[in-house]
Length: 189
Image (cartoon, rainbow, N blue to C red; front, side, top):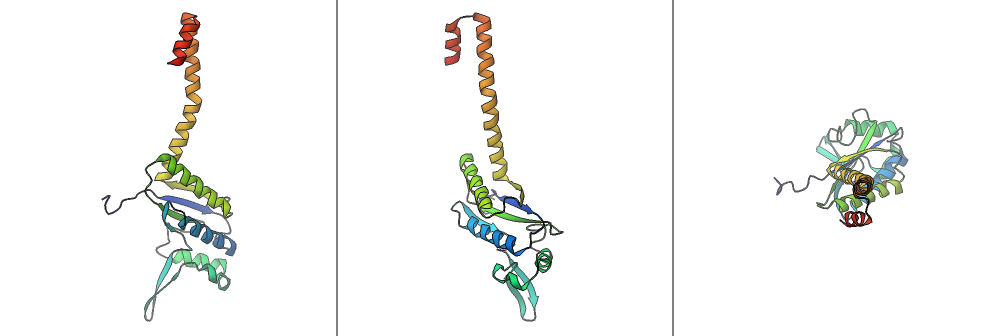
């Protein structure tokens, strides 16, 4: 299975708001998608601006961009929303059924180190903020996100409880022996 599907480390960014299908938002989303694609630790990125729309025609079928950011002037927000919601490949993967949320799916290169995963997540958040989409991003999910949050929580717990345990332990040594040598030895250990 790992030979065929070597990487299960995906990240999903969820964007919500009233202007998801506006020209400004879609241009920023496309710009973010391209920036994410050029990141050295990211293999693939899927969003409504990078996905193709396939539909039948008299000659067979046509393949067009789902949202063409170069041709936004010829459509309205409602038309763009209807097109994205009506695409069977985008439904429930890149867009909510009612069009109230859009997602970006990120497939990074295989990263085995939690610190490198944290650096990647920080880079992604910086790119989202740089493209003016931080206020629209409401959720993030995926194996990397879970690993990074577990690591952040572990670090936070260690920073809180290790000094507390050390203080309580040294206090107990002092109360039991009342000798500086016992404190010094316990502190060194």
